[in-house]
Each structure stands twice: as C-alpha cells, then as structure tokens.
Amino acid sequence: MKAGRYEDAIRAYSQALVFNPVNWITYSNRGQVYFILRKYEQALHDYSQAIACLPPKQEDVLSSLYRSRGSVYAALKEHQRALHDYNQAITLDPKNAAAYTSRGDLHSDLKEYEQALRDYELALALDPQNTFVYNNRGSLYVTLKEYERALHDFNQLIALDPKDGTSYMRRGNFYFDLKEYELALRDYEQVIALDPKNVQAYFKRGESYRHLQHYAQAVRDYDLVINFRPEADVAYHGRGLAYAMQQQYEQAVRDFNQAIALNPKDAQAYFNRGLVYENLRQYKLALRDYDQALALNPRDTRAYSHKEDLYQLLRQRGRRR
Image (tube, rainbow, N blue to C red; front, top):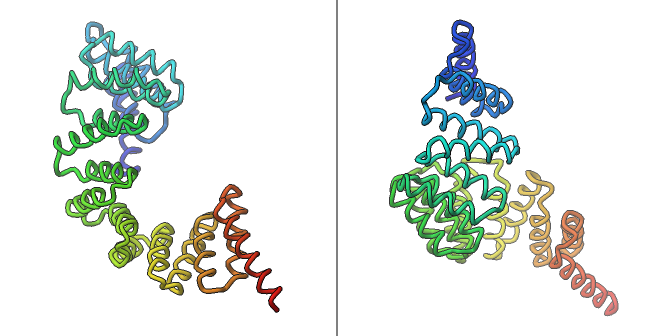
C-alpha cells in the first residue's frame, strides 16, 4: 500500500471513531497503520485505547493487542515496557506463538541469547511452519557462530517456501560470509531465476564470481547492476577490482573514479585506485590516493605500508640520479 493510501486509511478510521469512540477494532486498525508509518507515539496511544475498550473475556484478542503494543515499545527502545507487554500477552494466551517470537527478538536485540533461543523454540513448538522464527533464529545462530544450526534453519526456510527468493538470498549471504562462494553462487542464481530484476542478487553473484577469479562473468554482473542502478557506487568499485585483476588498468581507474564521485568517503576505493596508479607507475597519484585513504581510515595498515614502500622506491630512484 502506498503512503497516500495509509493516510487515507487513518482519516477513515479517525472519522469512524468520531461516531463510535470506544470501538477497539478501529483503534487497533489505526494503530497498525501508524506502526507501519513508524508513527510510534500515535500507534502506542491507539493500542492502549484498544486494550482499554476491549470487552471482557476475550483473552486471546487481548493477548494479541498486548503483543502489538509491545512491538511499539520495542521500536521506541522502551525495552522493559515491551517485555512487560510480551509477558502479559503470553500469560493471557500461552499459545500465542507471535508473542514468543517477538519476545525472542527482544531478547536477541538485548544480547540475551539463551532466552531468545528458548522463546524461538517455544514459538516453533506452537507454529512449526513460522518462517520468521527460522529466519531470526538462523541469524542468531550466525551471531553465535553456530553455523550448522544456522544452515539448518535457512534450509528449513527454503523447504517451507521453495519459491521465496528472499530465503535463497539469506542462505546465499550466509555462504558468502563463510567464503563458500560456489555455494553462494548457486543460491544467487536461484534468486535471479525467481526474480530476474533482483539487483542485489546480480551484485552478490558478481562479487562471488570475482572472489572465484571468474572476472569476465563478474564484470557482466556488475554491468547489469549499473544498468539497473547507475548510482550504485559498490558496483563500480567491484567492476574496477575485476578490471584491475585482469590488468585492464585504464578501465579500472575509470570505475574507481566513478565510485569515488558517488561516494567520496569510500576509503577502500581510494586505496584500490592507488594500487592501480602504482601499477601504472603513476606514483604521485598513487601517493595522493593512499594519503586520502588514510585520512578517511587512519587504521588502514595496508595504505601505510604501500605509502612507505613507494616513498622508499622514490628515494632510491632519487639517489641513483
């Protein structure tokens, strides 16, 4: 739904409340729209009103409302209030899987990982096909470096919905981060088969090809990304690296120039352009780029090393003269 339609929905719900100011359903619906629009204070007000207006003896509905208000508190970083509402939701309805999921997410955000895993387990016991839980638990396992368990959850995501490209993307990124580029490549290809306009999948496939030293294929994918998104500095940067590895230095310089024009604070682009200038024996330009890389990232030991080596080379040449 477009933003304008959300605003229309808010106006309609507000008008309905003029005629019936104690309708908990209308407050809940308007609260949901406010939450989507990230108008959290208004969402908080509406969910609180829905809770107050709900007739008695509807524990399952009340549980859902507390869970929704808890999510608003979580978005506002009011963690203790969020936890209180999630606990209340579970007390009212111990079978509310969404409440366990949300509480697990809160514990994860607070780095209370054991509690998060317990809540995810409880959520899955109630709803074994909940893809959100598998995704979030898988991501938590990655944080904990429990890679086999993370892979199990990402595999389960795909098994539950084999036509969901985002699940292949998550697993592909998982493999990519582990430097399993061949496996990542297969998943990115599956994403593209399902969604031929997924620009991020082309970019990540290009990155995988580059790491696998398949530079021509990498360049083709970076070309596609740039055609889709001419403002994508990372694609110019990646293509520049692929050109440099093929010793196509002039093309590499052009791409690094464009990457820097789009993102002047990219220290790595300056460093990589400096390497290309060094290979072209344009040493003053290389030194200037190393200096800029260090200005942006003073901890770049490689830039220091290359700068010192280049100064030493130039001093030696000066003595020979």
